[in-house]
Length: 238
Image (cartoon, one colour):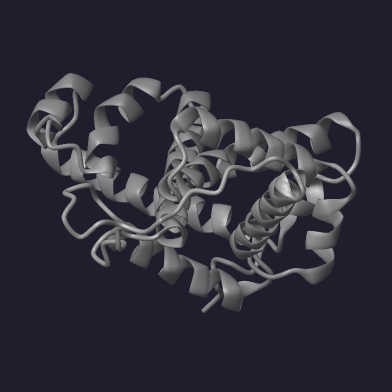
């Protein structure tokens, strides 16, 4: 049986190279797909929203200069993992620069000794039940990827003149609790309830294929794509 992942290998990363219009469009798509996961990671590390977004802009600016994506193309593998590693390297550089700026300067040293009689909080131990930055990054990556695939599906149906059909059936793809009943959808579209069920099944199948294509665009080969699909499912369950 043919794997649904065999058709594409890092195609989005490859298309993003160069200065022509298609390359710039692919590059914009790539950055958009990973912007929110990066911001979520930075916020989970303890930064405020504004600070996280400022750092995210700085990170992507660094990523886009100096041939970083060409380097990613050389090492291949999962772009998600490459990007997270690049983000951590960027943050380490930021910390090094910050330490270098303070080194030798007039820095006030504050004692961390805590009086046992005081009620002020001391050093806090992280809650092991709260997901760490890496897990939050992966979960937001999965959500963003599903959103992108859903927009792909909407574009396809709109091009076919079926925008109204998509609007009615979309809640059955996203699990919206307020979704209209299939009988009511059938009445709105002038088709039977059985026909609505068939349409929902077909849309779910196409949606799944578009999600897998999105995955395949940023990994190297079918085996990695299948592993990334499993990782996406796990991230959504976390």
